[in-house]
Image 1: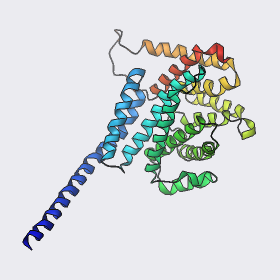
Image 2: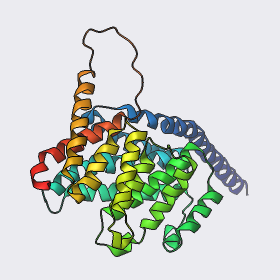
Image 3: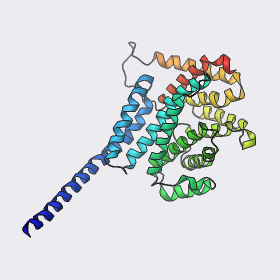
Length: 319
C-alpha cells in the first residue's frame, strides 16, 4: 500500500514539474514572440539583396523552432505568415520571372514559390483558428463578416488577413490552369477588401497593387478591366512615389501583357535613375556622419530594381 502511494505521489510530482516546465517555456516565448513580430517590420529597411536572401531562410527556421514550443502563439504565426509570403514573393517569384521570360519550363523557382505560399496560407489559417476558407468560395461577402467576428483592428490582425490574401491570390495567379484553384480568387479579394477598408495605407501601397493587378490581370470576358487597372496603378504611383515596386508591377502586370512599351520605357528610366542615386549613397564617402533615417520601403525598392533589371535583359523578346 505504501509503495502504491509513493508511486501515485511520484506521478503527481512529475506531472506538476512537466506542467510547470511547459508554463515556463510559454511564459518565456510569449514576450519573445512579441519582440520577433515587432522586429519583422525592420526587415523592410534592408537594401542588400544577398543579405536579405541569405538571412531570411535562417530567420524562418528559428521562428519555426520557437513556434514548436508554443504552437498557438499568434505573434509567431503572424511572423511566419509574413516571412513565407515575403520569401515567395521577393525571392522565388523574382527568380521565376527570369525563368518565365526565358521561357524555361519546369522552373524550380515556381515550385518553391508555390510551396512557400502554401506554408504561409496554412500559418494564416491557424492564426484564424482553423477557419475553413472553402466555404466562402461562393459567398465571399460572408467571409468579411466572419473576419469581423473573429478579429479586431490591430496592425497584426490587418496584416495577417492581407498577407493571407496575398498568399492565396498568388497561388491562384501562379496556377491559372487549375480551375479549382481559380475559384478561390474572390476569397483572396475579400481578404484585401477587409484589411484595406480598415487601413487603405496598409503596407505602403499594397492595397493598390493588388486591386490594380486584380483588374489588369483578368480579361474583360472574365470581369476584368485593364484600363481601370492602369488607372489604379497610375494613382498609386502618385500616392506612393517612393515605392518603386508599384512602378515595376505596373510594367510586369500591365505594360507587358498589353505590349505598352512606352510605359516600360518611362518606368525603367525612373527606376534606373533613382537606383543609381541610392546605390551611390549606400556607403560613407567622407561626408558628415549622421544617423540615417529608416526607409521602410527599401525592400520593395530592392525587389523592384532586381525585377526591372530582369525585364530589361529580355526587353527585345517582350515587346
